[in-house]
Length: 198
Image 1 (tube, rainbow, N blue to C red):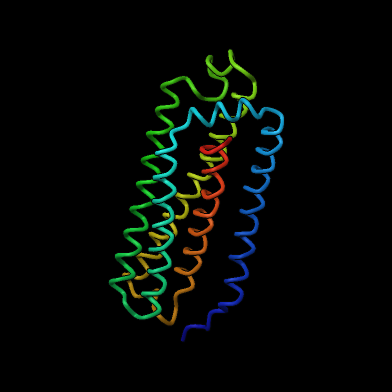
Image 2 (image 1 turned 180 degrees about the horizontal axis):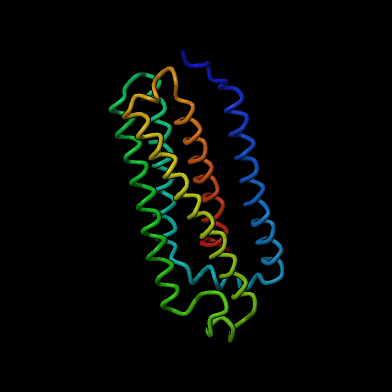
């Protein structure tokens, strides 16, 4: 007979982990604020070199995926397994779209010689090099978190298919959803800081 799972302990553990992630990105955002104060004109110039359409599309993609992840949890709680499966597949697909857009965006910047310590940036204002250093660090770290989130959602999907995640036992899916919401929330801060900087 299976031992009862301590759901409270699992949730507290997940919230502590999420708090550590918030501290990590919070520290990077503070660093951004310090350098923005030192090089405001360069940061504005750097922001103008980013593609706002790509950034806006990625924001929309993550917001929609956050909704479908929440919908998958509601579906499993109501014992609607197939709905949960489709919502999770859609959410994972959104993660793929986000990463593909980011790949093309980064590729376009590299083609224009806009990456840390490139000849173009070393010959320009120091603040511009700092801006792109922070841009690649923060968006790259966020992209890594998107990949981790997709893996968690994929594991949850497999568990749903195998009836390991059900209306009575859905902590894994719920925690994966919490992580995905955090990933989305972080992007909500990243988008205006880099793409809409004024």
